[in-house]
Amino acid sequence: MHSESETPVRLRFAPSPTGHPHLGNIRSALFNWLFARHHGGKLILRIEDTDVARKVEGAVETIAGSLQWLGLDWDEGPYFQSRRLSDYHDIANRLLQENHAYLCYCSAERLQAMREEQAKRKQPPRYDRRCRDLTEKDRAHLEAAGVTPVLRFRMPLEGETSVRDLIHGEVAFKHDTLDDFVLLKSDGYPTYHLANVIDDHAMAISHVLRADEWLSSTPRHVLLYRALEWQPPRFAHLPIILGPDRARLSKRHGATSITEYQRQGYLPEAMVNFLALLGWSLDDRTELLSRDELIKHFSLDRVGKTAAIFNREKLEWMNGIYLRKLSLDEFIERAMPFLDRDLPESVSRPLDEVYVRGVLSLIQERARTLAEAPQLAAFFFVDEIEYDAALLLSKKMDAASAAGALSVALEAVKGLTTWEAAGLEDIMRPLANELSLSTRDFFGLLRVAVTGRTAAPPLFQTMEVLGKEKCLKRFSAALQLLCNLR
Ligand code: GLU
Image (cartoon, rainbow, N blue to C red; front, side, top):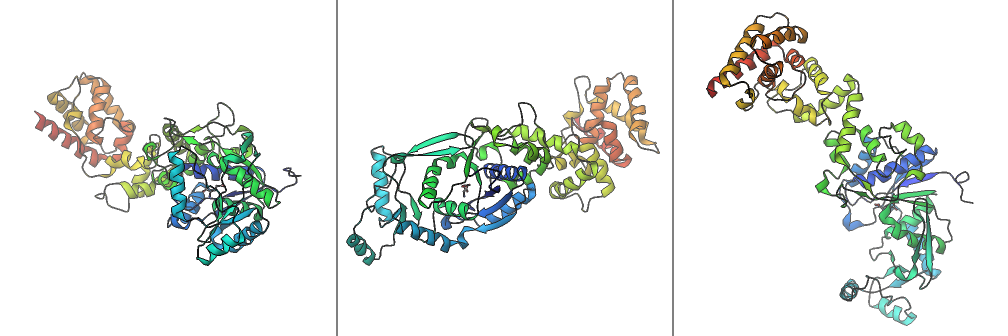
C-alpha cells in the first residue's frame, strides 16, 4: 500500500533553530534534497522551533542562507511549528481522550531528585510513572493546587516495537527500555516527538531521512503513529559523521558551522560534492560528481551504516579541483570579494581590474580556497614587501655573491622597453650561466627579491604581472638588505 509508485515522494528538512547549521545538519538536508530531486518529489522546509528556551536568534536565517548558498532549493515552507500549536493541542487532546496519554503533575524538583537517585543506583533515567494511574480525586486535588501538568505517552509495559529502517533494516526496541515520554510540556509547547509525528503526517511526508541519533526516538514515533492510526513514513537513518580521530565533530576538527566554510572560501559546488560522500558513495573510486550526477545516481542503497569520516584535507583538495575548473572570469568573480575583504588595508580600493586579472590568472592554479587567494596574492598589491633577508641567500651564495648577482640582473633589465615573461626569461637564463650559478639558485634569489617568498607562481610571469617599476624597486630594496647583511 505504501509503495513508492503510489505515494508521492515528499521529504522534509526539519532543523531546530537552536544553533547555526553544522555539517551534519546540512548533510541531512543534502540527502533529503538529492532523494527528492532523484525521484522528482518535493522537499519541504520545516523549522522545529518548539524549544523556546534554546532558540538562537538568527538561526533560521543562517539555515535558509546556507541552503540557498549550496543551491538546495525547497518546494514548500518554511513552515514554523510555533505557529501550529493549536493542531498539536487538538491531537494531544485526542491522545488523552483515547487513553494513549496521561497528565503528569510531578514537579521539576521531584523529577530531578528521582533522576539523581536513579543515577546513584546506576539505573537509566526514567520517569517512575507515578502519575500514570492517578484517580479522578488525585487529579482534582492537584488541579486545585494549581499545578500545570505535562502530557505523557502511555508506553506499553511489555513487548517491543520494531522499526523498519531503509538503511539499518529491522531494529527492535523493547518497551521496558522506553520511557513514558512527554508529549506536551507545561509551557504548552509540544515536544519534538509529538510535533514531528503530527507534522510528518500532516505534510504527507513519504520518507524521513535524518541522522542516526534519532533512530532511538523512532520506536516512540512508530507507537504514536499506531495510537493515532496513521500510516508512518519510511525511515532512513544516516550514519554519524566523525572526525579522523573517530571523535564527534567539534571545533577541534575545524569549522563546524556551514557559514564558516563559506567565509573560509569553499565553493558551494565542492561542498555539495564533499558532503554527498559523507555516508554515500557511487562506487569505491569516484570522488568527483557534479550536482546533476549526484541527483542521477543518488540512492539509499549506497548509504553506509557505519560512521562517515570527515577529512578536512580531502575537502581542501576537492575545493582546489573545483577552483581550477572555473573559467578565469568565474574565478575572478568569486575571488574578488575575498581580496577586498582580506588584502591589507594599506592596499587602496577599488582594486585595478586589469591588474587583478593578471594576478588571479597566476593564483588560480595554486589556491585551495578562495580565502587563500589574498594570502597568495598580497605581495602583488602591497607597496613594499617585508621578508627576512636571509631568504635571499642560499648554500652557494653569501651576501656578497647574492648582491653581485642581483646587480647584474638589475643592470640587464633596467633599460628594457617591453616587460614580458618570455623576454625576461631569455635574458635571465644565460645570465645564470655567466654568473656560474645554477638557474635554481639564481632564479630562487630573484624570486625572493620580487615576491619576498621562496614559493610563488612562475617567476617570469610573476615579474611580468608585477610590472617593471615594481620589480626594479624590489631588486634595489633587496640589494639594500644584502648590503646591510655584510
Ligand atoms: N528537529 C530535529 C533536528 O534538529 C529533526 C530531526 C528529524 O529529522 O526528525 O535534527
